[in-house]
Length: 182
Image 1 (cartoon, one colour):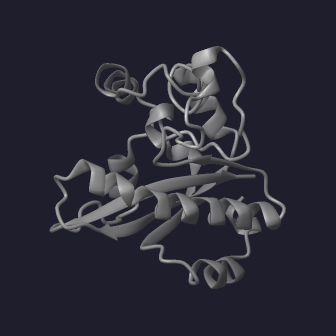
Image 2 (cartoon, helix red, strand yellow):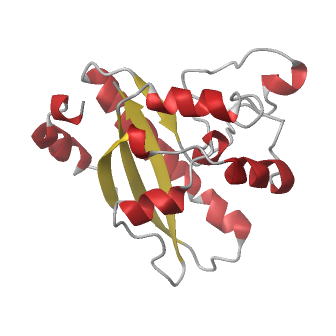
């Protein structure tokens, strides 16, 4: 439960990092939506190519069960500045710093005795070529964070419900992650 997390200690921890906004949310409020998976399948080149993406992450129903098996989550964002938001290569290059923040939040919760499961921005770029393509198990399951969308999570709906910023305008990028915990 959220009440079992020491909020004061967590605030002290999180203040050391460039996290823009965060909320501790009840996972019962998170739905896995088929429309997100449809976008993955039809528009993402990573679909069916990595352990962090569908269909490897499981069915939508399995993903929703996985999310709901953790009663709470820390949902947070970080900001990146780029010279041109339309430059996809530059924009994506800012993701690594957010992934490092995501790992830090997950590691903190683990060090506090929580079991965690992390959903982030990535479709996993740890290995040069994913073992999934070779029909082998993930080489780094402890470091791989499936993307939020792989689990059908509609980030914009969480942002709206939690009254968080979704777009700062200009040449800023907001990255989002969610570390589920129990």
